[in-house]
Length: 517
Image (cartoon, rainbow, N blue to C red; front, side):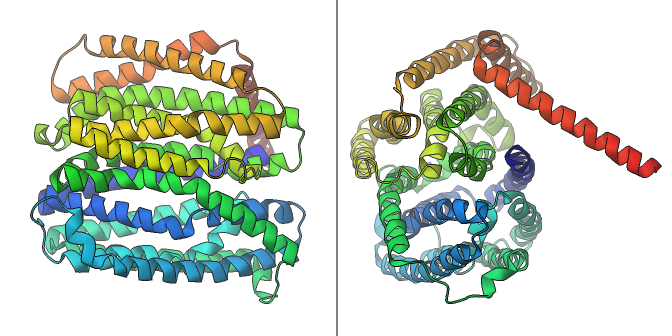
């Protein structure tokens, strides 16, 4: 059942992300040609500011979803009601906090832009961005029970519908009105409607949530929950700082134009990250269920399989992105929006090191290891800001990404696996780091080979792009297969695939028999 739920979540989640990617590229193209790179820069800057404001929410959603795993598995309705009531109250407080803090930042906005402000209505644009963030807090809490119940695919279907509809309206607004404020108003309206719809859907799926609005946790349960929440807040704060500070630092020290140019790369990288992240996010609830119902040996095996899958997927994608991103941007919007190869390499390296944390992050969040090393992420956040500011002044925007990589390697790279292996698996983490080194060496060697082969043919831009794509998708997968085809993780995945195929054919046969009958 866990595998089936994970597969459903992956299929619908990935499909939703693919549609979002295609529509996002279309909207971004229209955006660039109607409004220009300056508005792209403002969009990227304000998105980063609001990401920083989400510090008010840090860890609460993860703590809630983790807390729901056990009562949902045990069908403890009262506990679920109590947790959701707590979630509702807390998120309302968070929404008001984000609104107040966001409004207090308005006088400081001009100081976050290097040089002359390149757009009109800066404050109104910021307020509309802020409202998009705030309104979600009053409805989004009901998604937690759907996610914890391993039914993410329902949210994916709803989100896909609204992505299609909202992006169609955005394109119409851009082409007919061409005013950025109206673009933001359109986004705000669709976000409100989508959140309300998901909230109503959760009410219909879990009707018992309304039966006991006064259900509450015991004093000890509340104490445990808020202890976990505090630890998660500290742990996740660096993630927000690391991901949200880059555009702000680039804007302050390099200029808003660089934010706009980088935003095109960020769009591509973040859409791929979201697509891949959904693969692992889709199995989070199933891993949470696994951790409360299976042995340590079984959990360790699944961790290794997830980590191996993580390496394979992010390895292939990192190589492909490095080879394809500049040719794609040239074909898409032109040479004037390109970044240099060294900068692109650091962006992709940042993508790879972030992605390789997925297995550790998934198990840390689903095993409740929130308190271990809870202050270390603050070190990562501090290292990131200090190193990025120093390096951006020395080597330009490439220094921002190098600072981010350094901060991640100093904390997350080694500490998360250490904690998981010590407290969840009761074994040494040396094997993990050895495998990490083997995985990374394999990616580097196959990457060098792939780059060399991809440069053997030079042709028309479009033909060249498709040739590079074919090479990037073929060679790394071939190398990985040859190296790891006899590994335990690969054989386990092969058995899972065969099992799913057998189940699919059985279902198909049953359907045919029913129709014939």
